Image 1 (cartoon, helix red, strand yellow):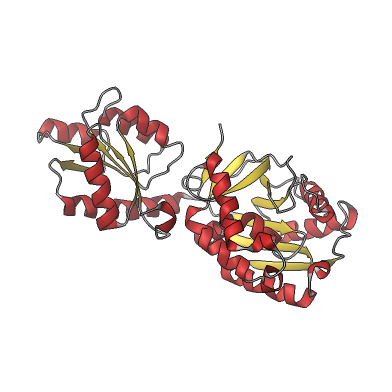
Image 2 (cartoon, one colour):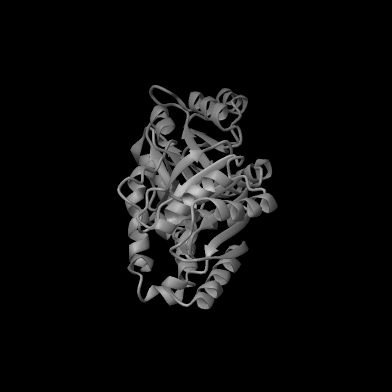
Length: 352
């Protein structure tokens, strides 16, 4: 099963074993019987490197491996992420191995040849428990997404907003004009409301003149009013590297108005220039379908805007995955960052 076909809550598992036959067997069992998304590494060092582009819910590792062995890998995992569930497996049934694994804080100890039912049960249980532990320890974010026109934020960060919604974060969308130059203003406002409802987001629609938005003065004050009311921890807005004058103006005004917000990042629009230089690549593999659903709300635009075509949207997300991994990515130019992005353990990738 391809990653793009996985259900949104499919457990993500990293299997580590120097025996390729065993690794393939475990991978096949977990994919077919538990519906997992599985990545494989054949030694401890490769597993550590794989974690830079794949964030699992559970790690299943052998003990005896060349170089960094399973128990050393477990210690490394615990240093980096104490909440990540780890299953240790070995062909040697002995008290010494079991005690060593447990002392190294393994969550489960399985012996080879593996009992497939026990393996599936352990992975499913630990994935659920691990996600619950992470969620309990995660501070909820307050998100403000700002766009010049209806559909701007959904195009730029629709997948990220869907991830925020699933994480239980508070979402507010601020649209600074009703987009009268691009269609019927009332229709576009109703479409924005429909999209916000899917995200369970609060929506502010202002009435600045489409194509005549200023980057200072009144625009800054409008944004400051919403910032004061919402108190966001994360703000998403347009990039200044954009051909559309409204997009550039909103970017300038937002950066001025959100100077006290911890994290501010700029998204790509269809009119972004080649100077758009993302520094953060957020995987939205599990949220691309939700992004397409959000964009479907803007029916007045889909007939005339090729960039709203699902194939175009999916291809764009696929292109950026070459930098962020997975099958779909939304790129961001980070202006400043002192708060975590949504699901930092699962969705965010830095380009080193």
